Length: 144
Image 1 (cartoon, helix red, strand yellow):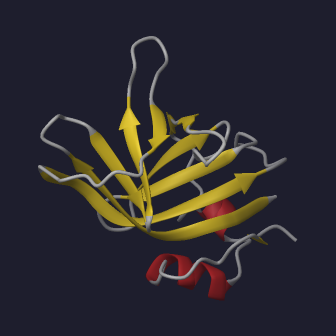
Image 2 (cartoon, rainbow, N blue to C red):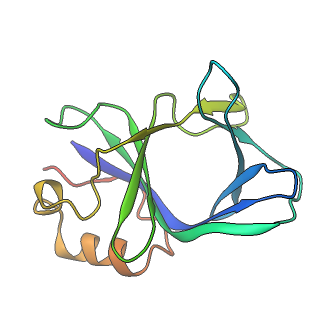
């Protein structure tokens, strides 16, 4: 089953100190890559000044369970360009108050726009995901 947990707008910036900052709507994460650990997201509550923008667009977070061709865990997808998406696996989900860090792993597994999965999505849900992304759809399963 594929469940859309959240969707909205994102912005990825880089500071003068070469730190990447990911904004998912109003949530802020530093995107860092410590040696020997890989990429992680860390909750951030301090204001950041952008040296330059790296990307912006829509995002979607899915929970995947028992789907062929997809890893069972949370998936974050960031839009870049027109209808192009980059996928990331979130083995422990996004960072939260009690868990300040979370791994983020790039993947080629893409749900958004993939006919293998979107053919099961209702037209209204798919249209909303593709055009608006402004209001969270929140926890509605696509697989029936």
